[in-house]
Image (cartoon, rainbow, N blue to C red; front, side, top):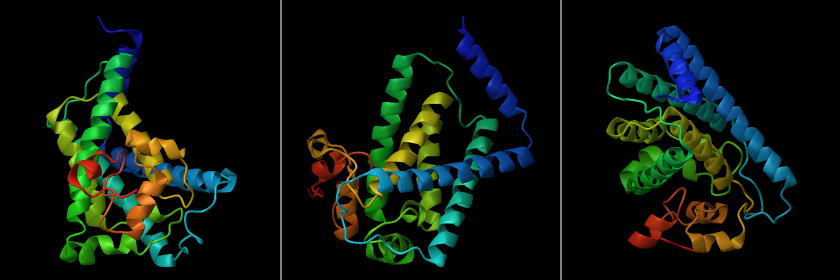
Length: 242
């Protein structure tokens, strides 16, 4: 028998199932604009309240082209959500509805580790010279960072990251709650990773955490530190730099 919370979740999923495509497009754009704004606000808040010394002398300057590209990233992320809805409505993605704390924790952990592995290889491939020149080089113009750096990506990169997650969701029936928690962690981690101040305590490095400094070093040395949430895969495949 479902608990009250599981019944309530089932009701919400049924409500979303009834959405028209115009409603889904509006919802997708609104939620991604909100997340974009949340990331910028979080970056500015931490930057103003964190008293640690900057990792680099100055933040990367804000440019008009970066503003436009970051906003187009929002559109691309909205498109990925719509692709996910299409796959869900056509039975390619099934959403689990188990809400036990243990199940949610295991699912979120699985998403973090699996996506970290996939993103490592995707990121590594993005540094192949031809691909780097065509796609990823724009992001690395930010040798120092600012509150838009996370979103300064080529559209193919944004869509590629999204499709990797959709493939995972096609392989296992993750709960919509687990997916939502993971996506929030992903946004917060990405924001923190592109700060110009170390957010994590120094000892976190020994726990294989992908700290702010860990990713900042990648922007300075493009042959190292391709991981996102952890340094596990860099340590395993010999691309780790401390």
